[in-house]
Image 1 (cartoon, helix red, strand yellow):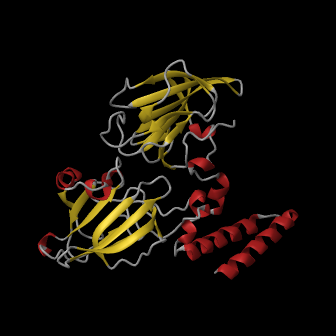
Image 2 (tube, rainbow, N blue to C red):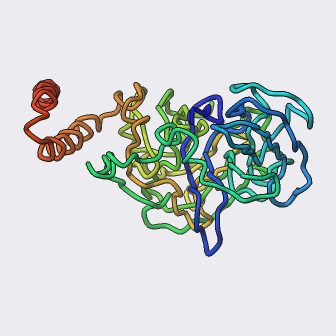
Image 3 (cartoon, rainbow, N blue to C red):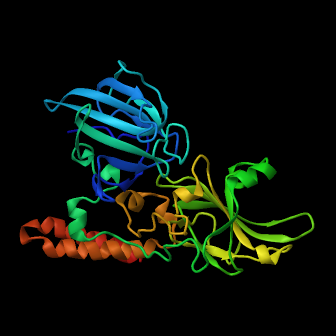
Length: 359
């Protein structure tokens, strides 16, 4: 069944269909920045467009598809920041029907812990759910194919699964506090100041590419450490870190959740209140990506095929490690091939020769 991907750009599957926390999760969650186009997966008619379940689905749209391989099915989209279609509207496959949402506490988000699209396939409007991955290309949702499972997932080392390597999370200033004293953009207004001893290591909470690295000093010449701006990739928002030092990253480097960022530096005026300033682009929130006790939510270490093929990833200094993992996977594949697949074996040998030159 050739259904469209339900978003205007690729996201990352954050929760699958089936058992979750003792209950059944009736759809798939795809992490994506707020405001991303939500796409109708097939031709049909809008049969629900409302916010009736304000504390659950929030802004919600369902589209009836009368003939998908001879079956009537419904595709449903929840936690939207905006609904662009109303009941009775005819839609075509690929039409934009809304904007993604899910930011904690935002109007229309319903019950949501962070920016994402909740996507369902139903047999009837009231329920009788089916696994969406049976209808939409699994690879495009970031899921492992059976072949990937057989080969073994490509992985990278996660340096830490916590924001701080040792210190507890102690917030000394919130976005509300920053907004009262700042007229700047989101790196200041959407920020948390989190206290930690000088020298505490900090780790990335999102995926992204470093686009700016500079030291910040006031007019008196007091240096307030390095400021690091990271452009989000893989559906993550832009991120910003300040008051840090010992930063080995440079512009163009790519970081993933759990990668080392730097260390908390000395605060010249009040060393006893040394802290890291961290923010993500609004309407996302820092705690969409880590728990209140500092656990980084997406520090899995797995490399999806979208990551592997992304030009952003290949700018990272860990690229040799990726090729080594790929080489191991190819060895396993080669061992499983029969003699009748000699041509494929030759192709793999040629790929290995190319990788040897790169490594």
